[in-house]
Image (tube, rainbow, N blue to C red; front, side, top):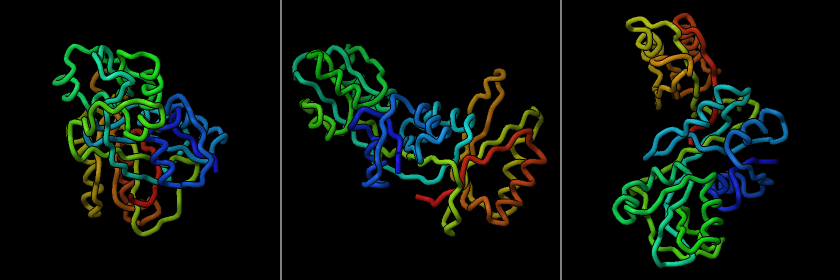
Length: 266
């Protein structure tokens, strides 16, 4: 099985993939969009991408690309994330680098301990570690095992802004798995009609059928200010009768509905 992850070696996407399938043939990519496009084209069997983080919220790029492409969420995994500050030199740190998500997750630490440091975003935590190998005044934020992999010294551990820092990853493929009885469905709803109670009518379709929603989030449609897509996660499989009934009702009140996947809950 060819499983796409963010590279180079040492990223949290790789950790999630190894936990999912230790024997998978991992293929490394420069960004999440390339992973998802490779899944759509068939050059990958599956891709592992982050959906949301307990501190920083959703990963916008992944949400947007999932809406655009013909791929399906086939599974999910929640991975505890512990960040470390690492460098080849324990002296003065002038630049701190990492992927934008870890930088956001460690915002308080950076402000308190390195207020004068320049903060730069990179493609991944492991890419940041590779760069920190080359410049003594540079420090990277990544996982502890990444420091060992790239020969860096850990200057501080557990620097994330919250103890319970968890990232939810999605396993993305082309097919929806069969129901297990303990499933989750992800969908996107676009209303396209600015009227009072429009979103409420959609949510009532779930309430009337006692369907529990685990996530409701808006993303700009990019068609105009104040125009949004609504991303909804709910308990149940798309093949379940009550979920199908809700979907029929939602389509009466929405301009666009896309099912992103049905999959076993983590």
